[in-house]
Image 1 (cartoon, rainbow, N blue to C red):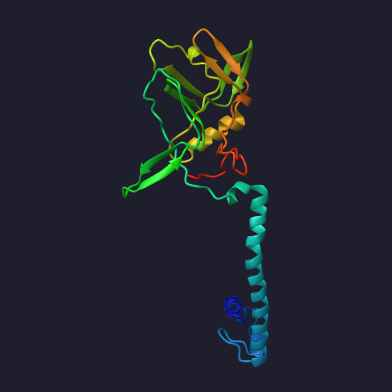
Image 2: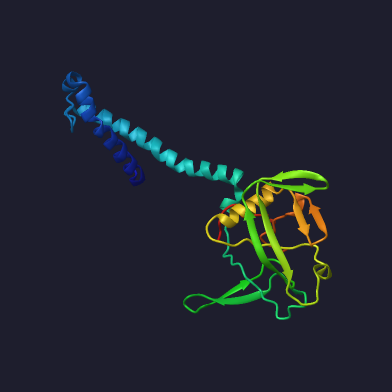
Length: 247
């Protein structure tokens, strides 16, 4: 018997021996005829039969342990392939532009360094092209209640809403002068709250309303799109979202 199989044999044999006490209490007359006590079996042929059953069930248990991970991996690869992809170290970085009145661009693959707790230098590279604009979020409010809002003369209902207030940090410049076709938002916070907000916006978004005072614009929910994990041309796949917390 192989050493790997011996463990399963002993485990199954012990399961059978643990049931002797219950068998003797439920069937005392048959147990006496078969030579079965609460702890041992006196009949050598019955002991050999018990060992044979333990060996066969042990082989079955071993085969299940060998094949079950393969089956699980196949199912996970089919349903959630991102769970099996190796995830590199990720780090959210906040850039502060030196000239607040100018629009600056940080290209993808821009190198930078940080220090860990031990003082060692860690080298990183940006994964996304980043545009630094003189725009800041000065207020945010999450409303979990049902909200009724007008859109093109009709009242619509949203299960919840996220209200963000932006302001231009450069004096003398209006939002229209920034000429921004898109805006990237990164949700931060503790626990699962940022992930819940991200999922609600991308899966349950009803509309996007832009209000600049007198002007109000409604955009369809399709304008909310997740950024790919990487923009590198050599990447095998352009993954749209990580399905688990990788940070």
